[in-house]
Structure formats: C-alpha cells, structure tokens
Amino acid sequence: MQLTFAATILTLYPEMFPGPLGVSLAGKALERGDWSCETVQIRDFTTDKHRTVDDTPAGGGAGMVLKADVLSAAVDHAIAIQPAVPILAMTPRGKPITQERIREIAVGPGVTIICGRFEGFDERLFEARPEIEQVSLADIVLSGGEPAALAILDACIRLLPGVMGAPSSGHEESFEEGLLEYPQYTRPFEWEGRTIPEVLRSGDHAKIAAWRKQRSEDDTRLRRPDLWERHSGVRAQPASGERQKKKDMDQ
Image (cartoon, rainbow, N blue to C red; front, side, top):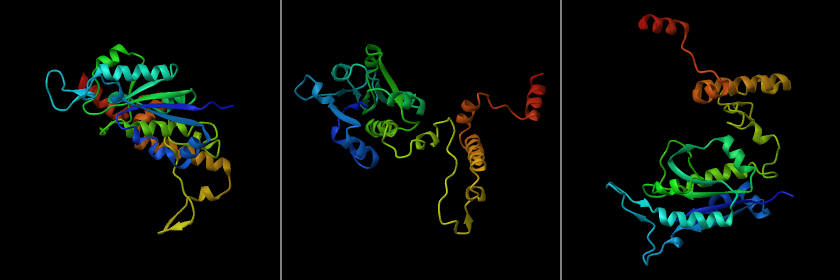
C-alpha cells in the first residue's frame, strides 16, 4: 500500500495552500489521500504581543529580515511532526532545485518547506539547523517562497504512483533524461500552411523514436547548452580554428 506523501508548509500565508494543487491531477490525488498538505503559521511561534516575525537588517539596509528565533521554533515544531523528511528553505540564495532532487524527494515520506518573505532569513537559522536545504526555483526573485513551494510540490506530486495516467508519461518529460523534451504535434495535419513532420505519421516506431531522440538532443544543445554540457559529460570545445587562434595568441 502506498503511504501518503505528507507536505508540511511553514508560511505566513497558509491560505495559499493547497491553492492550485487542490484541482486537476494533484487535487484528485489529494482527495484520494495520495498526499496531504499541512500548513504551519510561522506567526504562531512569536513570543511578543505584536506577534513580530521580522526585524530590520543588522548593518542597515532596506527591507526586513525573518527572525531566527521565531523561524527555528517553527522548524523544530515541523521536525516534531515529520522527523524523517527533507526540509527545504525557499530562498534566491539557495541551490537551484533539479528534477533529480525532485525524484529523490518524491520517493520519500514527504517534505517540509519553509517559505521566505521580505529580505530573507537570518543566516543563523541555517547555521543552527544545518539539516535545512537552501533551494531556489530559478534565477528569479518572487515576492515570497509560496509560489516556489507550490511548484516544487506539484513536481513531486505528479511523480507519486497513480497520479499520472500513463506510466511512461513522466519519463519522457523535459529534464527526466537530462534533456529537453522533443517537440509535440497533434491534429489537424495542416495548420496555417504548416504540417506535422512526415516521420510522425509513418507508423515506424523505430524511426519515430530516433527522430525524437535527435530533436531532443539538438534542441537541448541549441536552447540549453548548460544542460547539454552536463548530459554529454564533455565541456563544449571551441572550433579548431578558434583553438589555433587562441594558441597563437598565447605564444
């Protein structure tokens, strides 16, 4: 029997969850009990009458910083709820999350996600709680960690057994094999003078698979050279003429 994937979200805005994850495939999975979502209001762990969660940055500067004492109390509470799950802190200073890490999280019992706000976290939180992973969604800045947390949860939920219809669907998506997915087409055959590639209408599954593999590799090499470099395991080399030119300049 598949155990429920339990998500615990530390946030100042618990009403944002499950949000869009309450509809479509994730929503149906939530109804079935494939996953659960519990929110923890960070403000509940304040000790002053004003329920203060942030303060001005040491050394001056704009904005406010989430307090280490308040966050640590909330984190310790979450650890008591789920002691054996990864703890992610959403922050632009974190390491970009990868599909490989998503797969690792999805096979476990769940995840705890801390949603940052304002100018971020007091750094001492991470020094005192080294089990917290600092992660980012991409090289963008959001108003808070909640949208990023929703995206990460969505990526995990779709990998849970029984959530997606076709078992092979997840393996053919972009990033699953370290490459972008091949282009997709559907009917009508001709649209605004553009037609579906003939190979996709050939019925020759070997040729179709080869075409898709080639397009996946070509598109990754052109659009995401960083992914291609990791996939191929070979750092991109300059053309022979450029190598010779550089060698001549170095001499």
